[in-house]
Amino acid sequence: MPSLPPTFAEQVIAQPARAQFEAFIDEHRSALNHCLDGLTEEQARRSLVPSRTTLLGLVKHATFVEKVWFDEAVTCRPRVELGLPAASEDSFLLDDGDTIASVRQAHREACEAARRATASLDLDDVLRGNRRGPLPLRWVYLHVLRELAQHCGHADILREQILGE
Image: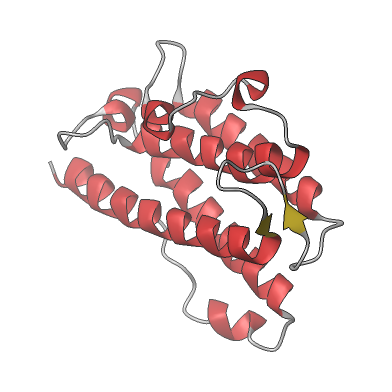
């Protein structure tokens, strides 16, 4: 999995907070999407831990995260209308039709939709569609960044195990 450039933080340090949040979120989105680079379909689906976590499942779950936090929370549309599972843990489940190409494309599309959904919002704007209740965009950005960083770490370890075999 490609690591973050060594000068990345320095490139946004003088930018406003929103630009910093978006740059760091985008960097982690990209890193997670690229964890599938060079893998076979079998490798991407390989389960190495007792949970449902696979590399392909991580990227599929990241798509769920984007849709929950930047579609459901912004538009207030329910998960069923968005075609999302009710439970977060079910977003790791892979269908027979899930491929590296299809999951990556769905993830890229969800990320682009998230950028469009938040483009006109300010960090202190309140999103009302989340199950936790109203939350400011600033909190949502921090939460998504935390989740993406955690999953990038999972992906690093899984990828290292798969490629080390």
